[in-house]
Every structure is written in structure tokens, then in C-alpha cells.
Image (cartoon, rainbow over all chains, first blue to last red; front, side, top):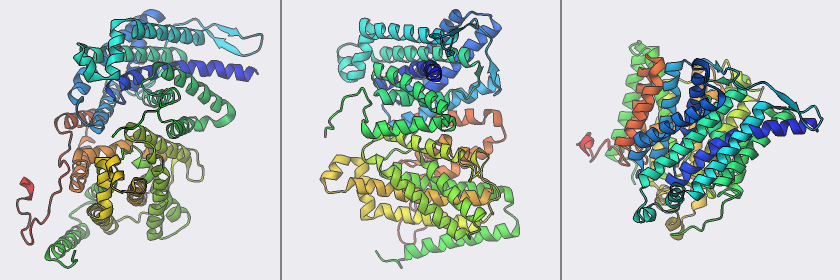
Length: 294
Length: 316
């Protein structure tokens, strides 16, 4: 029982990270139909910005989190303007390769400046551990911080998307770009906002990972990036609650598999789930089936 | 089509002449081992690119898992030659066959998926193959498979490349190849015209995987040593980049792309820290300024008309 509770706690923390990254993936895919492979590297940059702020400028946890989110959201806008905008009308495959090239550029460009060595985050949160329900299962203060930050960001995101004009514009562009342009929505601005919000969430995830797992390196973004994409696909890409569900689901399944002794296979499990979901319900668990039109 | 036309004889003669000249230069030591390594890399990349072009360029099935087929071929040949002491010919044929069986397995999901979803599913397939390789102790796990005998030489390499190009370019021109192109252009229309889309999509994956398996065998038996991480996601991307750089749907383009990008990669080895950054920038510039690739979907004709060597092929 203790084991189960402990693994659920760990799984929820990991799942929060996946969910935050998956949200950016799903928003960007919903609006410009591009698998933004660079998204995992924006998360990595967020972790590095947080590291620099807490280590060299002695920022606390929350200031570092907010500044990292700002920096990554600006980075997201720049990436979109420089790299993806010229290719908006080109083929899928060209856009995908561009995304991969941006990803490589961020990884190896940063590696050139910070060297490939692994960095260790300073202790920015007090190391408090609580026992749960009188058992020996331990919940760390960090777990609680991660969950709370994730939930707050998700509530804010829901508010932005459903209650503000920008969010309305995003939903309209995702539904039909041309028609929304005819209705007077500035597509370029809306896409920039989408990238800014998605990248800010990834940046937040980066700082949370740095604080939780303590170590970061320039190539840390690629695997969680793929996992978050899987999470987005599980929930149905373009659907925001789906991404959140997919993130938590994947996080809990992965920690569960590790706990059962299959830690070497935990990455493979994620991909097996992906292929099964794609085969059984290609539009994701939350997606509706679309009829193919000629 | 007659086999003994003047054009075919000329092509055959030229193919043989190139082989003999290079073999002679290798024997005389004018082409040293450094150049030979690069020739092997280029040759393997040509096979991989041409076979992926059949899947992605001609049949329009977006695959990000081509390195997995190569990996299956490499390990099959590696196990057969290093552990079981079989001759290379057995290794190559077994590599091609096991890889094409994997092609059937990955071909089946394509019956339901398309576009980005298919790309992600094939990516997942590639990662699963890699992770299984990492955790299998018989084939060395993460450390890799060592002491594979070096059987790959210029003869094997050259004739594998020629065979790949010959078979795939003739396949494209056949009835079956046109069915594949029809699927790329419009799957629903192709189906309405009586093309068995399920069969041809799987067939494209099987043929593509077959040659990727051969490339894997050549790789394993040249470099002595293979490990699962050499055939990861990045390797699949490298192959895809060659195909797109050369031009989707152009065999000549794949050959030119493989040669150009292999040389670029070799040149950049002089500056290891910035190598990947420059590679990324070059890739980005190609996608922005020439998204259709060097050749588009055109082919370079070696002999435009009977006997007119090279004609004005370059300006075509």
C-alpha cells in the first residue's frame, strides 16, 4: 500500500511535468498543425534560465519561475517568427524538418556556450518531508509545489482560453484559419500568443524539473519532449484537457512500470501505449472521430 | 522493353567501368583508407536514402523509423557473421529478410494512420526497437556488439548500391510503382480507381525495409562494431534529411543528397563543437529557400537519347 501511494505521488509529479509540456505541444499543433520538435528544447532552456537565476543571481523559487517563463515565451515568439513563419505554406515534411533543425540548433548552440556537463540546481525549496496517512509513504514539499504550480498554471490557461479575447481568437484560428481571418482576427498575432503561452508553460516545467530532480544538461529536452508529445496524442492532439489527462496518465504509468521492475523498459512502454492509442483511437481518447471527405 | 538496347548497354558499360577504375585506384593505393571509409559511408547513405525515398517520396508514407530497419539488418548480419560464423552472403540476405519482415509489421499500422500520426508511430517503432536492443544481453545491450568480421569491401558496397538503385528505379516505372505514386497523389482517388492501397503501402515498406536491412549489414560488417544508440531517432532524421534535401520522389536526388550531405558532415568534423549547429542552420536554409529539394521530383537522365552522352542533362 505504501509503495502504491509513494509511486502515485512520484507519478503525479512526473505527470505534471509532462502535462505542462504537452499543453504547449497540443496548442501549437492545434493552431498551425506543426509538431514543434523544438518544444522539448524550450523546456530545457527554461531549466537553464532557472539555473542561472537561482545560482548566479540568488533568485528565489517563484521569481526564478516567473522570469524563466518570460524568457522562454519571448524565445518561443522569436522561434516562430524566424523559423516557422517563412514555412507556413510549405509542405508538412519541410515544416517538420525545420522544427527538427531548430531543436538541434537550440541543443547544440546552448551546449557550445554552457558545455555539455551536467549542472546541479541549488536547494531553493526547504527540504521538508511529510508522512502520508500515517504510513511510511513520504511526500516531499517539492511534490506539493510542483502539483500546485501545475494546477495554478492550468487554471490560468483555462481562463485565458475560454474567457479572454486572445483565447477566443486562438480557438477560432484552430478551428478555421481562413474564416477567422475574414472575421478580422490577426492570425500572426494569435499564433505568436500561442507560442508565447505554450513556451512559457514549457519553461515553467523546466524550472520545476530542475528543482525536483536537481540535475540538468543540454540534451535533457529531447526525451521528455517526445514523451509529452505522446501524452498530447493520447489525450487527442489539439484538445487541452486531453493533454493534461495524457500527461498525468503517462507519468503514473511510467513510474508504475519502473516500480514493478521494468525501469529499463519504461521508455518503450510509453511508445507502445502511443502506437496502441494510434491504432485503436487515432484521434486520441478525448477526440471525436472525423469523417474523411474527398 | 528490350534489354539489349544501346542505352542499356552504355549504362551497363559505364557502371562496370566505374567499378573497375575505383577498384584499380584502391589496389594501387591512390584512394587511401580515409577516402575508402567515406566512400562506404556515402554508399550506405545512398542505399538508405533511395529506399526511404520509395516509402516517403514515391508512396507518400511519412516514416521516421527507417534507422530501425537498418538496425535490425545490422544486428542480424552481425549475429550471423560474428556469433554463428556464417559467410557474409548469408548475413546480408538474412538481414534483408528480417528487416522486410519488420517492414510488414510497421506497414500494417500505416493502413490506418497517415501524415504526422504515421510519422510519430514509426518514430515510436524505431525507439521500441532501440530500447529492446539496449536491454538484450545476447547482443551486447548498451555496450553493443563487437568483433564483427569486416567483410564489406568496395565490390559488396558498389554492387549493393547499384542493385538498390536499379531495382527501385525499375519498380517505380512498373505498374506497381505507378500504383504507389497514385497513392501519394491522392489515396482516395487511387482506391476508387481500383488500386489496392493496403497492399501497395505495405509493399513499399517491405521493399524499403529490405534495402535498409542490406545497408545495415554493410554497416555492421564494415565498422566491426554496432550499438543500438547508433540507430536512434537522429539516424532516421539524418536519412530523411538526405531524401528531402535531394528531393522527394527523385532517385537521382537521393544519390546527390547522400553524397553532398555525407561530404558536408565529414568536412564539419574539423570543428566538432559547432558541427551540429552549422548542420542545423544549413538544414533550415534548405527548407526555407528550397523546400522541394535539389532535384524536386525530376530525374537526371544519364543518356537523354541513344548515344548522346549527358546531352544537356544538367540544364534540364
